[in-house]
Length: 155
Image (cartoon, rainbow, N blue to C red):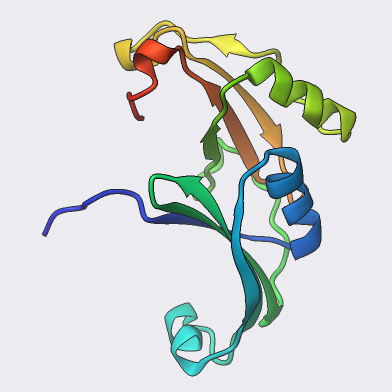
């Protein structure tokens, strides 16, 4: 077996519309589709008995999808962990203009955790500018702006 690449990233949210406002309207990620799912096969994958959720699939490019799920049943419990807590993580999205992205987010009341940082090492991160922001459910989002010469490099 070998991994062929990243297919999708999924985040569970409290309110689908609020999250679409963040990911689609503020960050500009195109929506592929939305709906409600409650089929037995999906419930089986979740492993929690009957499952019903609303979803939005967003196009991250290169065939990769951001899947946003609002579970209707079973109801989840919000967990507010930070990126340094075991079991947590973050979603990194590449932007073409970090300054403009931060201006748009600030107008909507979303502020970065720090000033953008310009990375120098390792080589595949050289001159990339990064910053963390938080989505409406407390999920850490890293905005990454890479210079054109390293745009093809991936983490």
